[in-house]
Image 1 (cartoon, rainbow, N blue to C red):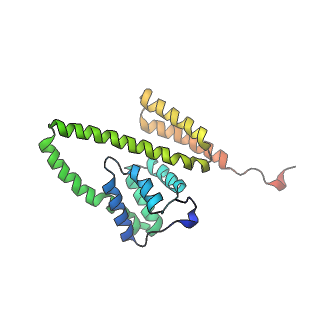
Image 2 (cartoon, helix red, strand yellow):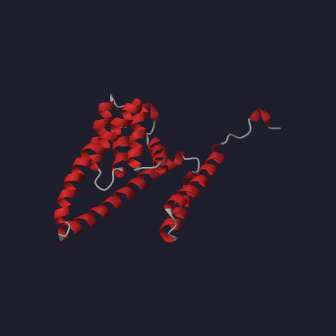
Image 3 (cartoon, rainbow, N blue to C red):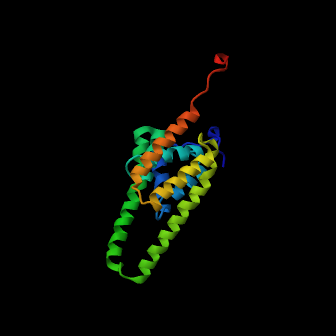
Length: 198
């Protein structure tokens, strides 16, 4: 896999986007995000890891499901609003049918101990997939203007605030987001030009 944008592939049509996101959605039991990076960056090579992380960061602060926001932005990147709707339809159409069927089955078999155990196991697998994806994306921090130690500090502060101090997630994201954006802006500001130095 290359992280050089010059060697990226592109989908051939909005139908290609629809099919790719449909298969992506069908692989993501318990959450598509863990599979999205592998499919979009490694298999399809539509995005570099850095582009994926940047798009995901925006998707996470927008209202709505992260992966749907991600699909909309990636579809729009290639084919405008047609691509955005194709990607979203791919994420939603077939999984919606599956969820409706599983809901009907669950209503009948919810009290079965085997079903309860299977659902608990799927939750653990989903958590592991998301953790593994996070570890794979750590390499993208090399090009982040805040650098890995500062990003790690934000991670620890967010964890402590939400998990230990039980602060509302929306306020933690808002507060840390403002601080992180300000810090990144300061780091990205160009210094004085060489000719202006005395």
